[in-house]
Amino acid sequence: MTLAERAATQIRTWLYDGTIGRDGFHSVPEMAERLGMSRSPVREGLLRLAEAGLVEFVPQRGFRRVRPTGQDIAEIFALRLALEPQAAARAARQGRDRDAVVQQLHRQLTRMREAATSGDEVAFGTADELLHAVILECSGSSRLVALIAELRDTTRLIGANTAGRSRSHLEVLEEHEPFVDAIADADPARAAISMRRHLIDTGRLLVAQAYDDGDTEAWRAWSDLVDEDE
Image 1 (spheres, rainbow, N blue to C red):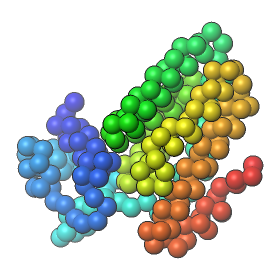
Image 2 (cartoon, rainbow, N blue to C red; image 1 turned 120 degrees about the horizontal axis):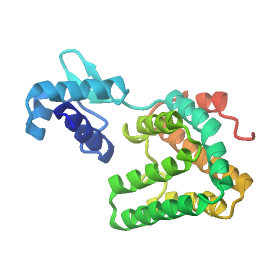
Image 3 (cartoon, one colour; image 1 turned 90 degrees about the vertical axis):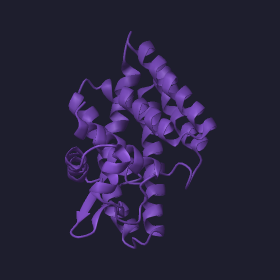
């Protein structure tokens, strides 16, 4: 891993765990001092995060964490709803490989529970992301896995996270159990429905947070892009 990659990875973690808050500006020299690096790799790492839409640079002021809008969230969840329920159904259809998939899913559920108990938000989010990745990998498409990871980054790492704000970590965990159980039971329809319900519940909570943060168009964007009755 290059110094720029190390810088981007650490700053990404700080964005996610709240070390770098939603308000206020930060500078490259400040980050370089925190990381114990020279400014060049830190600047390069920050530019990568800016390209990913996680931070933005403002002339004469530095960089700041990007806030998600209701439109951002609605677009992301419209895409996830088009892809992830079908991936859950495919996972439930796995033949001899399904047992291995279910073992991996239960491993991540255990890690989520341990993180929820200890209050480790970063570990919880990582296990949550890995659980979804296991399901997506059943599609056989590495591009799909990468796409969803990028979409999750956009919500998870810029502060659009419901755990600990709209619902507890254990409540988030409990929403994952139905589609994991459906995959274990080789029930594609139930797996898809449970995944869809989880994504809609999560998206609605995130849009509500955007609305509470002052985005008055958040619900309009959600209703325009997401068909909850489909």
